[in-house]
Image (cartoon, rainbow, N blue to C red):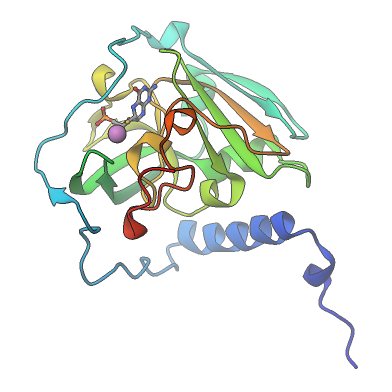
Length: 222
Ligand SMILES: Nc1nc2c(c(=O)[nH]1)N[C@H]1C(S)=C(S)[C@@H](COP(=O)(O)O)O[C@H]1N2
Ligand SMILES: [Mo]
């Protein structure tokens, strides 16, 4: 019997991380074909809009870039706190994706530019124990996602939208975008990212919203 391939011995998250890294290498080299989208791009129960509504907790933090920082820590080898210049010096990534809000509006073909979450992970190097990621924002908001979800090749921390700096009401100077989840899974005005060895529920997740938040199965409430 041939020996098991090396990856079969690795923890599942480690395998997911390596698979994501390979996908990213292909994508950044321009070799990755765009992901096959569903025939019908509109998830069930959603309607398409052509504006970009604003949803927040009634607080709009004022964050000039010189006051901005992003702390990234937890179960990682290299915890960092990035200032704006350091964040902007990371590899830049542009991706067009659809945006689905749980309040039933979807907007197609949103062009976001920023830093791929994968580049962030590559910088801080998650330990094998890291399984989940928790986000904290300047308005007191928080949300959480499995690390595997965050390593998808359309997930980014966006600083620009349709070629212009992300407006403050949409989370500027920088927000998280997780296209395959309802939009509450993407923290606006993100200030802290913690890699965890377990799941911790965020602001809406403790208030009855689904923890998985998959628009295609209408996974809205828990
Ligand atoms: N910091 C922060 N992030 C947040 C929210 C929030 O209130 N505060 N609302 C979430 C929800 S419910 C949605 S639908 C989207 C809305 O983003 P938008 O206002 O840019 O449309 O942001 C998500 N991220
Ligand atoms: Mo939302």
